[in-house]
Image 1 (cartoon, rainbow, N blue to C red):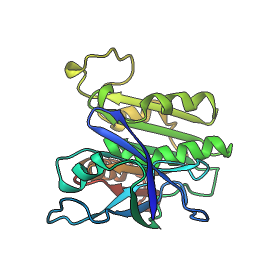
Image 2 (cartoon, rainbow, N blue to C red):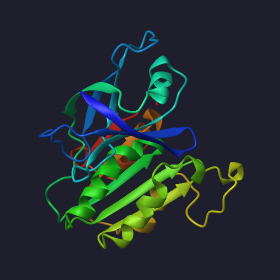
Image 3 (tube, rainbow, N blue to C red):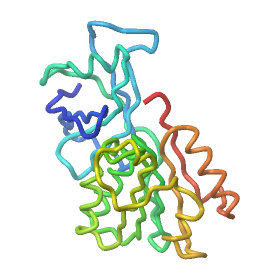
Image 4 (tube, helix red, strand yellow):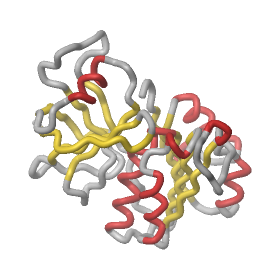
Length: 236
């Protein structure tokens, strides 16, 4: 059991939830957990348990998850959960974790809320001063939708081996200014930032359609499946 300590809106329609970290509960950056609401006031056919990537790094004091706030019984309850309320967690699960061989670049391709495991990985790399060269490509429709965007950009000043390339694909619908990329993550964008022949492991996280499309694009570009790791975020 862990208690909710804090919640905050981190993008339009997206909230982060901070829980106390159980003593001795260890996880690797990029892993996930199952969260179960205890005696919620409402429920539906999807049940009271959801899987969440852990957005916090192992070095951070709290356990953080983040999610798009769809109109479901689980999310309505989570949004209104009083601070101090306990939930059940199980895990950690998953192997979307940073490879050990630092001679291979880590190229992270994130869409929307798929950023959560990558935030954990990038913060960990900065805190531990890992030698891995990390390129994070982060696609959203608008800056307003991009969770953790400012802090991910600021990480560049903490880690000289890390670069964040954010892209906004529907700036016509935004109220903010944006000087960065505006296309979808595609071969041209990768070619712009990744030197040809660079040994790399590719990580993909985001909506199923995006994950499938990027996986196919990498295969067509000659990247072997052994060098691609992916996780779909459906229904979030």
